[in-house]
Length: 130
Image 1 (tube, rainbow, N blue to C red):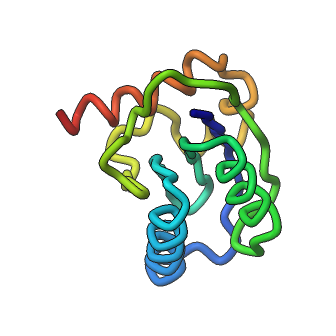
Image 2: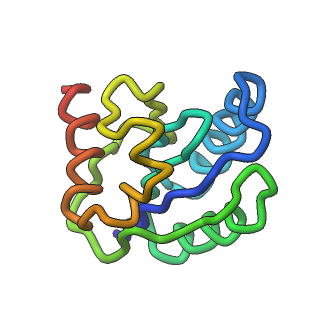
Image 3: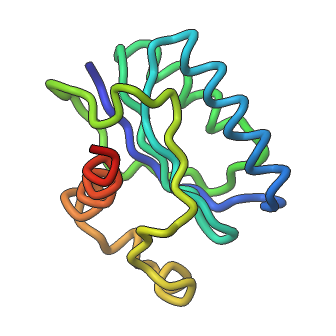
C-alpha cells in the first residue's frame, strides 16, 4: 500500500466544480482500489490518496494535469501498512475540521507544517468516522 498527500489551489471553485470533482474521484478511485479523503474550500484542496502504489501514482498524475488544480505540491508520500479510509473511495470534508484560516493558508501555513501535522489532519477526520 502507498499514500500520497498533496495540496493544490482550486481553480474556479464552487459547489458544482466540487461536486464534479468528487463524482469523478469516487468513480475513478473505485475502479483502481484507491481510497482517501479530500478537504476542500475556495482557497485550498488537501487530499490523501491511498492504495496500490502504481495506481496511486497514475491517479496523482491525472490530478497534476487537471485544470481544476493549480500549484500541486506533494506534502507526504510513502509506503503504509493500512489505510486510514478503507471504506471511502473519496471521503470529503467540508472543512469542518479545518485548522488553518484563509489568512494562514495565504501566508504559507501548509508549506511550514510538518509531515506529521498534515497526516494528523487526516487521522482526525478518519477518527470521526469510527
